[in-house]
Image (cartoon, rainbow, N blue to C red; front, side, top):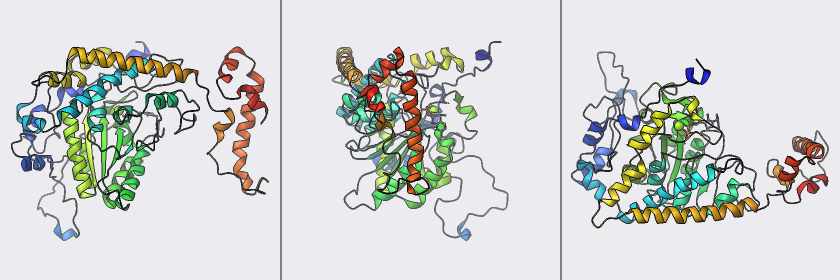
Length: 479
Ligand SMILES: Cc1ncc(C[n+]2csc(CCOP(=O)(O)OP(=O)(O)O)c2C)c(N)n1
Ligand SMILES: [Mg+2]
């Protein structure tokens, strides 16, 4: 058997097998106070906040438990249900009608617009492999990313993982900045051309620069929420922390959640459970009931949502944010979705999952299709084929225009590659062994780069690449 075949695992397109009945019953809503009640979860574990062991419930038997209890679910001790408002065919779940109709229609149209733009951006960026060194897509996860983005205020502080460019699009981050980051040009204001593509950051858009090491955003977000709580004038703001389910296997996830629950501060954790961490399927990532089951362990209010239902994501995140801000505490949202695209442009997922499973999710469960159908069914219709095409056309034109511009822009001088890593060496401390020692690794790296440029800089491939940097090869020679 060829290696690729033997490594292939059966993908579980779980959006199709979510405990929908349970989800529907959980959110059978009639009055607003009841809606809020139903998002509240009680646990079979001890109360989240108790002060003395004597307040524990006692039992004469050994009360082992292996699940959390969800009030309102048909089987309170069964799998945690996911909140759903729109079915895979886009039809409104009758029991959720009242809640769905509270959502602002204009906002949902904007969600649809941004969700429609996202794949156009992805397609045009990822297809240019070779011209763009690397890219990561959000195919299949548009509902989680844009549905949640719509629930935040524009000055909420976002700590993202890397697949959440839709949040920036929602906040009108200019395409020119986006391209400058992906092409590492001199106009890349946040990372000055030193970061890998898709590591966006923008102070103006309250979007903290993405870090490659997974899960570092959890403790950072916990700290930011604590800071927000202590900052006069920022009352009412919230921190949002996005991550994939794979990142939650890192120690930082646990440290971050514990810090957040103990220190407090308004914070919503959104975990995109898309079934994979590169090639590792969730079955090899955890043995419990996903990520939602962990929230109660940290005393954190939690909700699971059908991530392919943009409207449910929006409603759940809006409510999560309200609870986080009013309670000055963290709330966890687990969104069940599916990574339709490859992990990145460096990945070929056919090596570890069946392409037919991917195709069936694409056909049977698209977040774009669900919301589009819902908006088309409104009276008067809030969406149409013409509008869909017009948005795709204008997005494509704008993206290609910015793409061509960024491609021609110069990259910063090569010497700047080493800037901001070490503190500036103080005057008179150049000697090795003194504080000047800090400079040594930087100097060694520069010398190595200079040596390589001198050796290979004249070859056609290197020549072409070096010409893209301000000052080119000559700037290196002057070091
Ligand atoms: C600490 C650390 N370990 C490993 C990696 C390599 N890596 C990059 S993305 C990724 C998978 C993450 O999966 P998940 O959190 O589920 O996010 P998804 O890609 O599915 O959106 C891994 C293992 C890394 N960047 N950082
Ligand atoms: Mg994942």
